[in-house]
Length: 467
Ligand SMILES: *[C@@H]1O[C@H](CO)[C@@H](O)[C@H](O)[C@H]1NC(C)=O
Ligand SMILES: *[C@@H]1O[C@H](CO)[C@@H](O)[C@H](O)[C@H]1NC(C)=O
Ligand SMILES: *[C@@H]1O[C@H](CO)[C@@H](O)[C@H](O)[C@H]1NC(C)=O
Ligand SMILES: *[C@@H]1O[C@H](CO)[C@@H](O)[C@H](O)[C@H]1NC(C)=O
Ligand SMILES: *[C@@H]1O[C@H](CO)[C@@H](O)[C@H](O)[C@H]1NC(C)=O
Ligand SMILES: *[C@@H]1O[C@H](CO)[C@@H](O)[C@H](O)[C@H]1NC(C)=O
Ligand SMILES: [Cu+2]
Image (cartoon, rainbow, N blue to C red):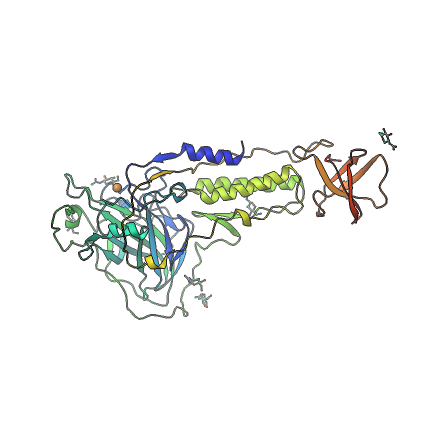
């Protein structure tokens, strides 16, 4: 089966119609630059349930969400004073949905952003526990008559905060938090948290350690008044009872980060990483000069593609498909008129440049509410078909499948013989390879003698047989 067909079937089989528009944190921007879907993000790896709220307010998953104790490979570089923007999506894989929304409009409630200093933000088992401080909070805006979650919707699901400029440098977890209170007045009350964590390294010349930190879980329980707040009461009982530690905004003075005391050594984009999907990196497979090395390169590419699909989570496999298309081009090259300079250029398989944030939306939100329609989605994050074993080389003297003609050079100089056979080397066009493929072309099937002398002889076309 051709790979594009595999892809289409996966999309069809994975199609899910979402009846309940929950939400999840999927990706973040540093000073308006998207770090990539799922890149440096701790989120649930359960594709069907990634958008579900946490089951209760005291589960350890309150720290960084389901799977939140599992570090991921990448760590984003952030400067003291940088603007961080967290994106929430009702359908995590945006390649499967058009006009996706961030959260169901009835999920009304406050938002906050927390940070915690850790020794290595890509290490596991460092999320739950003490050390969390709050850098942003937004509850109910009585002037606009809107909850923070309602402002997210016209704001493309974006929640932003400025990293306090006096914080000590180093590794941090950053935790966006939404609390939907539409069920908080019910019996039993069901306050619904949506949290995840970004893994960052902070460039800073500061030295501050925020004094007021809390343990997560622990900072709220069902006795905390906000957990049972009735958002349906008219008029609302204001002010909304905020919860968690006091806000830490740091000193307002801008600091130079030139004299940084610490540099990031973990979680950087690896050298040679040419394509990314979530926290997977693709590395350029080796160049090849003959069919055998071409198939090795093809195999390497396909193993990397499988790794890409296996590493993809709820945000999908979009760039794995791009990588797989690149692998298919290599594989096709091995089978037909092998090029002398493989692998083919990857540039036409590269994903479009990453999303750039609309700066006007990094700040406050305003504008009309979009419709919550078109919430069908799918999650084609399944492993690709394996290429399987390939012959190291075609059997001797067989016509190579998939190609009827060869263009090559006559290897011995001199005039064209009028009959008999002739050895030809080369493979395609007028390139020469480090290791040329040689063929024996037999008259009278040599059909065309084109061009004048080129290298050692005339350029010919002949049926492609291996000599
Ligand atoms: C909260 O949820 C966790 C995870 O599902 C569960 O282990 C725990 O028992 C729950 N606690 C309460 C008080 O319901
Ligand atoms: C943080 O500092 C490093 C080392 O100078 C630099 O490469 C990186 O780009 C800086 N991060 C940002 C967000 O500017
Ligand atoms: C709930 O939180 C409050 C305030 O932190 C604390 O005093 C109380 O002991 C907690 N209750 C339970 C059952 O954990
Ligand atoms: C960190 O990197 C910057 C820029 O590359 C350099 O000037 C500085 O000396 C480095 N600091 C440390 C502690 O390595
Ligand atoms: C694929 O090739 C790259 C570049 O030569 C190499 O670094 C990598 O280890 C290979 N991967 C596999 C799975 O063979
Ligand atoms: C070329 O070789 C073929 C097959 O051996 C033979 O039938 C034909 O007569 C030869 N032609 C000439 C011009 O020698
Ligand atoms: Cu929901």
